[in-house]
Length: 338
View: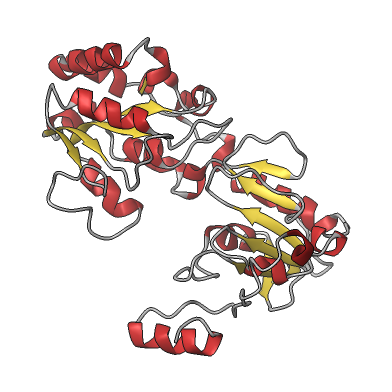
């Protein structure tokens, strides 16, 4: 049930956002868009509810209810937050499992109902792409191994900072630029950085939005979120060599490639619950209606992590300036630049 007063108006919620990135506007933010559909959000410096990410420690200055909202694989620490919304499949009533692709883009971008598969294949003029911004041989060597092995068959274009071979990283940032880069490629290597329960990021979504055939590695829950017959899952193959053999087979046989591309990415080609904004609002409605003693009032952060966040400073709710001169003036006022 939506929370409205007797005059049919949205319930007002005193809220704030912090540690979401210095260039990120609080009003031009996924959870602000979603929650505004049901609630009247009043942004203020002393909120009842704080939504924060992991790009700083300013959230530790707030004494109200804290909600962690992150696209990373870090487990929520309920000594610091009261609730969490992350891509992890975390078995806790205080947690909402929300894969990172759900706030990357809308479900309709990967619905295939109107696709002309033969035309899409005709526009696939390049073989395979690889976009990776960081490399840790102890954590994600597997995707580098596949990149090197597949490159023995044909050139794999690497457009990230790792093993870049196209003359430099992709210009600009964000989903639009990446999808446009991926669009001419038949395949895209989209391995996750890590394999944790439920942890599915935007990587496979971007490949699907560009109508590449995703080459994926990640948690087993991927087959519950996407049609397993619409992509190549490393977990279905006994070795990298077997996977590469399958890729080569599909690359040489258009009919076999099209058999994959005709499969819907989503089960029944319909949006799943993870794209349901009402599900998110329902979770927050429970938060807003449940009186609790916040974690911030149960123990003092300075006793837990002394010195780590002492210089954190609460920011105002307005957007971070877009020009260099305005940013420097803003940072001087906030004590962030000298």
